[in-house]
Length: 148
Length: 420
Image (cartoon, rainbow over all chains, first blue to last red; front, side, top):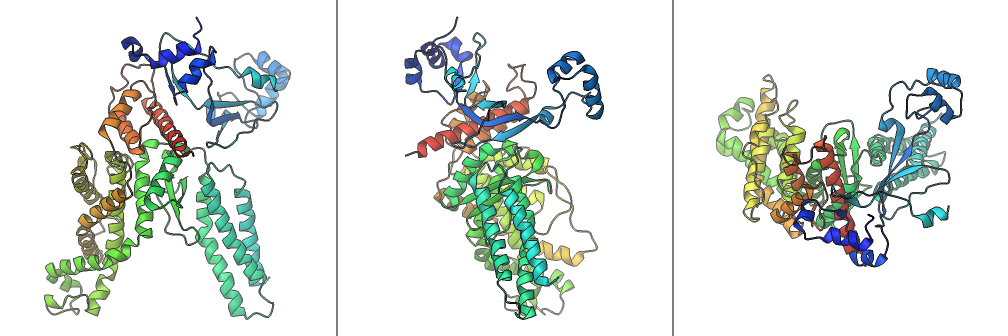
């Protein structure tokens, strides 16, 4: 069952002892009145201060499985070409997070500019704790996606 | 090549470097402000040199070149400090709350640069920089610069700026001298072993005696520096309560290296911190409770080698001079910070935060950095705190994350509160 916004709000404010032992928490607290009135089945989250971008120069290919052929296909090269690339830029050891990712801090009120075709991971401003009987997922706002 | 050409070329290089540094991702404007002020300084050197007429006397050219070179030596390391204030290893979340605290104590126009270095394993600050009045400059050791539990040590570094702004060295110089004179009188024979020509009887040991004055110049200078360190400890303790003690122990216990004459020895510092905590606790119920086994964590740094007998004697005079001042320094820190109305630890608030931390979530409306950091240290010291959450495999990392987020929430709330 998907919870409506007012159910989410009620769950956050719940005084029920069982709910208090395993609470739903969103911090900073969203505006409860607005949340209840929204009529949505979601909570709007805001972008936080930390962003991650992929370092483009450290690794030739980002392999998510051991299949060389798959990795080569994703990289748009033949397996043989990939072997040659790896010979010069060995990636036998799994790259660390620091090797893959560059972190960016953006203070409150400042901007992070996302250019077309770029990929970025951003933290949410809100810290969320889900109780054991709820699950959630994060999706982009469709109105922004429609805007390109 | 002429001296002037060398100098202008050097200045051009540093100005180019500053130009590149200005393009860094500054998380806060004050680092960039500091950079721009130094850029102006080097620009002024450059235009002064370029404006010299060719027939200017060589001595004057030399003087201008030397002044420019002196500033290059003086500020180069500081430019690196500014650059490293942009490094993402730093705990940027603490910047806003620390700036507010600094402004509360030193005035609204106070600016803050928070950075980190690999050079030493100790938080540090810079001596006053004429080009950067109103700046508080705080550096953390790089490996710990993302650790919010060590933020209380920034209170000590803030203390150095307060000490300089309020000219406490001048204020306490005479009293320190009096303490040293009194110490010499009480150890007259020992003094005479080193300085037999200075006096024939105890009563000759007076500040007006030029021999004595000269002999105590060095210990008096050391004692004033030691007083500064004591004062800064008391500032850190007053602001952050026992979180300061824990952070101090985390970084400095048991001890390392040889003692510097400019610092009180470790066990004396710890003893004086305990005294200050007892004094401050009288005004705030339930606060400043020093753990019973706290002093046992520390050892003294090794003293001066035995062959430096005279220096050891002078250092003992300095120690006596500074130890005699600690009561005044505790009061000074307390009255100054209470007048600034800085927020102190609230035991109720700390427990409310701990209730939230049990669920690994930040608390709202926590009122002060001290409340968060003291709660954080309680969690740190309680291995069973998250026993009910076996999914937390790295307790310290989880604690660090939730503490940083709580500090960010505090900052958001304060920004909203300040908004018109």
